[in-house]
Image 1 (cartoon, rainbow, N blue to C red):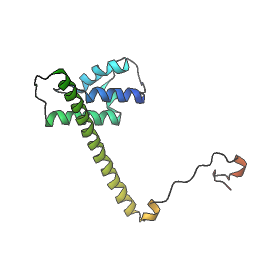
Image 2: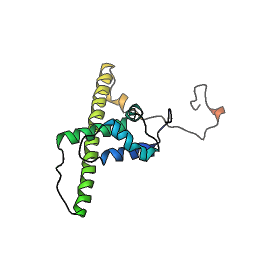
Image 3: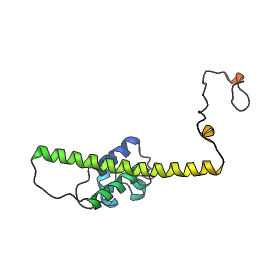
Image 4: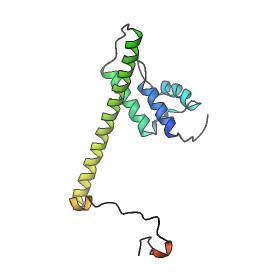
Length: 148
């Protein structure tokens, strides 16, 4: 097993797709680690997967989705089965995005409170980011890197 392997964005997206396409039934980290072997080429640890926020969010959303509305086994024609799988995958993605949206909203509320506590105004918060001028020679900059 590789140690301290850094997952690429492609690896993370592949693992998220595995989680989104998870069949009905229970989902557990041990099973996700086994399925991730097809994406990564080795079996990662639970800690290795769960340290990535996107994978953690997808796992929690999928687990919550399976707990809320377990799908019933119904015999369907092949084309409907493919459509059903796609709908289930999209519903999992929607649940994941709603969870992420809730987390971002909570973060915004924290920022809003901290800004208010420090007497920051709307104008302070709306100040645009400084422009980066990469064309300027270093002799035209002061000791802090600002253009003279």
